[in-house]
Length: 391
Image (cartoon, rainbow, N blue to C red; front, side):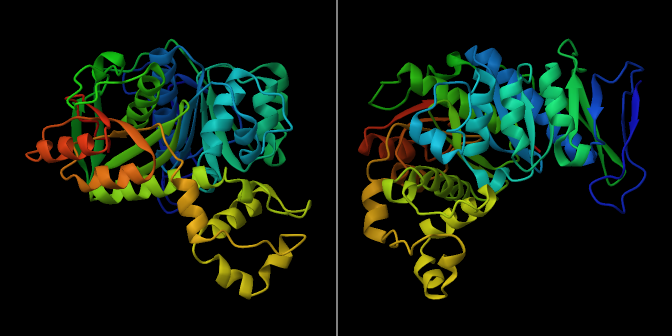
């Protein structure tokens, strides 16, 4: 089959809609369950490329959580701490390596991952399917599924959950084309290989770049390769912890992603971990409530008496002083940018979120200012010489 008719395009009024092969070859995907749509397949094909490249670069199973053609999260399989298991709501599950990768990809920004498209570099197993079974998600793409995993996924969303299998041997054409306003655009496919060799040009006084930071910078850069530009990605422990996508200003990317990274870290604060939730509160409601609790608006929400819906007792607010003190312990974070930082203000903002290691193309007329700002904080920055715009 070299054509698949879709329900509609980006919006219900955009019909007809289909995916097809121009060269006569078979489509490299098989729909095992559900009826994926236009945006689903955009997410599927972008996220599949991301996890394949992550696995090739690190040798570790990889997963991504996609929303609207940008990653909400991406990660490789590493051991999860008890704290991360708790804030990702997987402390009651047995996790295989690929399940751990998805728990991290989903868990870093659970607000954005709500209703996501999932990509796995490896076969979806029972453990990953059980994790997915209880989350709100639109669909999944993977190279294969165990019989148990497929049975679990087919029962999700009243039997309509989208399950797609992709041919791992598929090789796309070197040239990509798309139409905008009836006009065809053509470019060479971005098959740039991202690996440790890209991190050799260290331009700061501090040349220290440990293996863990190299891994995290690779995670950040590959994530950016499939994120709508402008984009910035914070990473730690083998996972993206804050993605800022589609902003017109670089500093707004850095702030957006930094705020997400801060929330990820604040969720690990003992006072947040100890919130007295009622047993009946669903995970999405916990996510929303934790987000409000961490925000500066929480005391106003307490005044409305809405705490009784979620908590067994009224929790004390997390004060600005407590948040500042906890964030002051945030360290060892890596940061990637899809294009150069034009001003040192990006570095100042990144420092507030524990950034120690940076990878960016370089090439700004103010590179000296950016390097000087990094030197002020004893940070390590590598100039990759490669831009990673994605549109």
